[in-house]
Length: 256
Image (cartoon, rainbow, N blue to C red; front, top):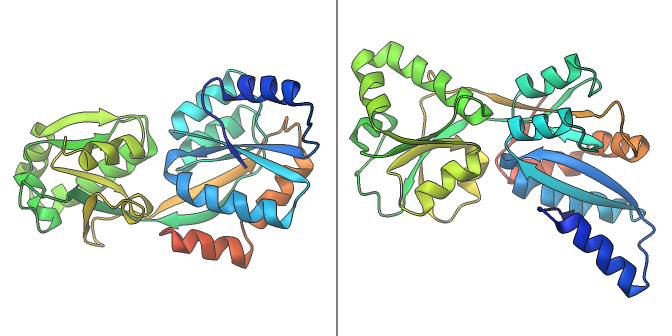
């Protein structure tokens, strides 16, 4: 398994050329939402163990960023999004095949370990001086907006107004949102449950069911997938009991 960052593909190619050793495995390129970082690294390791002839290459970013890269010609075999919207737009444009929801999760509120705003419940969000959310283009931002609209409908317009006034920044993806809280640069934020579970630097508080949302995570194979066979294998693997158990360990629930 490889996790590709900027320039990594060039460097890996250079080193392979110098070493004289060629990896003959099929390379499966997967774009995945940043919220899937930990779970997909575990899934890729298990998939490679079951399929030693396939090497998984993972690239993580906000779903909207990955969608743009695909639209601009990035070569990818499979795309896992944090919401239906960005994947559906790629399907409508002819870039991706039929989608399949492989996991779901809800949102939680996180605060720094020191909890300077002394937040104890979701209603205490108005105590925060600095709140960080995802921006309007990111799935986490869209889900957050839905939660706030539901809460404001019950708690009154003053709740929504105070929260809006306390927003310190709007980030491109959920990992950037979480990082602000971990670093103490925000008093509170909303993230997916898996992002809270995999962090040792935050305290987690539930969002009441009446205001929470269920975020579906869909996946699809590219219509131009260079390695369509391997992509189809991974797609089926995501529905397997072992894959669903790994997802559950990271805070997701079965799509079924």
